[in-house]
Length: 440
Image (tube, rainbow, N blue to C red; front, side, top):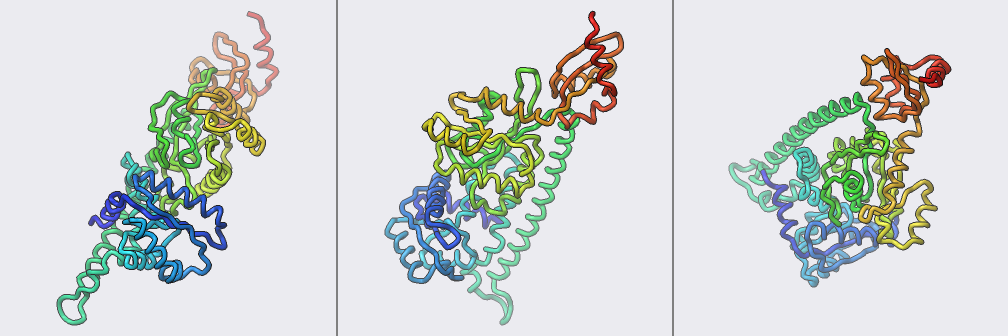
């Protein structure tokens, strides 16, 4: 069954689109304008040419077209005159509304949610991302199946009272989609279990983890590349990166941080995609630190920060320590940067492109990671030297001394490895101090 693929291909082939923004009592016209501008970027990301647009004020939503009959005919005519072959609404359309619009306009009609899903589908590279996108596509398509069989539903065959061929086809496809949804969920559950195993291994190793999060096109992949000399794809497009990439960041003192780039967030992200990408976003919800990247060159940066915080709350990551990073300061006036830093105390301004501010960001990351550290004195037998290596890698050594039997460490360690070193803690720090004060 390739029903969903046919709509994906149809949208890719639809080169000329007419965009419709919708303001309402709950959505101010200025914000609706911003969302419509963002819809332009989404269409451009998929390689579509916008030939016209309309921003309408919705007073009373109608079940048939969302807008009234007169306004719907006016919009259909405007799309016709613009030479568009597709209409895209920056508003959720019900299956009935979508079907009615396609009948009225004789064009393909999509909403924001379906457009975003198509972009994700065009950019998924790994098996996991492909499964997640397919799940979102099928969950979106399931209530819209009847819309795809209008012509078949009018056909009838066999004896009087039997089901039409369109209805039979609809039921077959519905069962097939439901079966495939169940199958994908099982496959993704297996992926989650494997991720959980990998995560436990990393936790046993004691290596801290940070996730780079933020609004789409804020420069997350560019920042990962700049910090770790990675070569992650970084384009000036929405959703340039879907698959999480993890690289090691080595600090000057020898400590290691696992840094993961994650999928970008966006306002009005389809709920199905948040659910479908939950296993990928677990990298953020399970991190020790979040590096929240914002785009200094975007006038809507405050709204984008709010959207990111909302999604982090939805995936259970709102309580994780964060460092807010203002990126792309090379494209921004100094006054804008200074105003941002005043609005968000403790944030860091950088340019992943030029390297400006990266040293300060690394310092901020280290400081945030060590904010919960405890100062301890440890006596580690030479036979357990792996514990000393762990402390040297993940903590800060203040003083160190060796004798015939042990390595003595006066150190600061993060809470995450405290249980690992518990058996080696010197009960009376004064005894450790005497060891360190003894002259060789």
